[in-house]
Image (cartoon, rainbow, N blue to C red; front, side):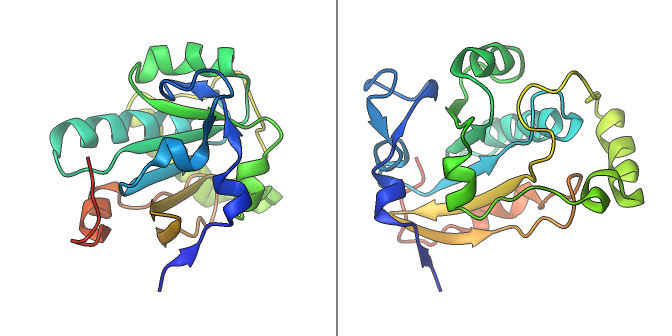
Length: 186
């Protein structure tokens, strides 16, 4: 059963990368999401190998699968730092700058424990990311925040992935199958 996104969060102004005609601070989360199914992806920090891997993987999937829902990233750095990062990894990506973690908090994305950051499963996932060309860099943003993934439509969360640790990831290829037939994708 879908969970509603709080109205005050949908009405919050957003700033970041490629967010639309409203300009810096002129858009709301509801306006950026619109009336289509959208995948919200909460990144850790821009030096994170898993974040780089996620952005590259989602760029590839959204290019290959015409029914892939639009992706909206969230990050904990400044708009300028976001533009620099996404220019390198996905210039057309839309992303919300959230250094105060207002949206992270609203969606229940929390700080990681030591085990979720440095556990053995995290290090084995680093090997996966490195084999795909994603390496660890300088942290830009909050290195302790967990990632998050939410498929939303109309003000409702249709699906989310409960991350077990910072290297965990959903099977991104299954996301289009989670969009109800009644939802608009593009």
